[in-house]
Length: 450
Image 1 (cartoon, rainbow, N blue to C red):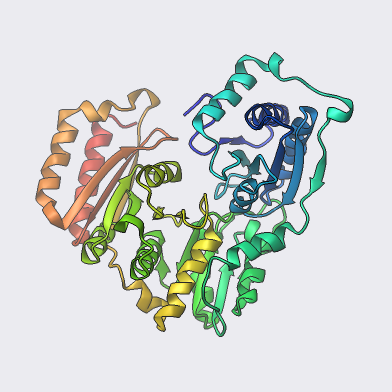
Image 2 (image 1 turned 30 degrees about the vertical axis):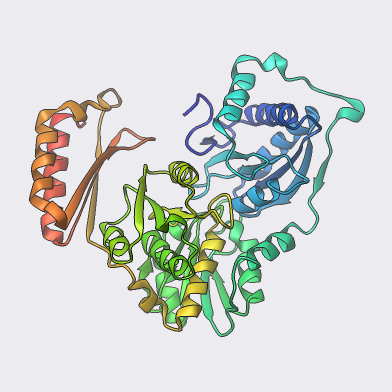
């Protein structure tokens, strides 16, 4: 990670950390770097989510781009995947999304895409950081006819929805669906998309007021959707996060269908259609052990990446794989998109549901989820990495791994963003793994914890 760009762009407390002044500079640097790479006046797609600070940061970003000679095409509050898709079209040189996805309203962020629709390459991020932090005097403001223009992209919603419709080969007539929009970007697209395909759609948490994005709703708080699906007799429910790059689902009985199961459903569907390139799927180390058993049963190779969609994407591109994702519902279909698209994920699962002729609960049985226990242990900032060299901790982990054998697994890792050690245990026997998780957590807390 760089000095400015983290795992997923630039993030911070909106306006106080990610200030209007910094955002202005980011916009100016984006115009300079994209001009250098394209050789001409750049056109930048700009989108945002529904949080109150997005308007402020959008104004600063666009002012920066235009003042450095770049043209802006606004698409408003649309999913981050729409920014990536429009950025990849011939009349654009890149795109910027203002959002922090599933995070709470006080935060915001800036995620930049190149002209290929992928997250900005590391070398270009490094160029931006150097301009902003080291050589701001090299960012030249322009005037007169060199100033950029700022216009709204015509029919952005319609064009994006038409693109998504092309990604599904069936109609959804007769389906009754509930959709939790998290008071975010899916508000402007989800119902139109699904009703155009024939489904009957009921939205919940679809009234953004600038402050309620992700608040007790969406993919981070799916319990409301679980209740709604059952009480309203829906065939399935879909839950997105603030920028709609994640999708989790609920079956007709109100049971959660998490990202691991959604990936398994799509992997089997792709395999049956001979579309699963290299017969492989990329998941993270946090993927449920049940996915490993599913993959073995269906002769699918499980490729493991570190936690984070950035690492999943890197592994997919390196290996030429088309399907991958995370337990949190961030799924990538690289044969159809360059970034996670929650609505696309939902469409591909609904396509598999329609083709199966059964119910969502029947479809979700493709994978058995193993019991999982996770405990977070706070550690002092200065104690990061120490546990890995503590023979008492590592010896205990090794002993319990041997005890579990093929019936479970232990994953102990530090958080990238907080001084935490995450202890995750999976296995067939909940009581056994819960006891092991508590034992290891207590030992870490005793040796290096706060």
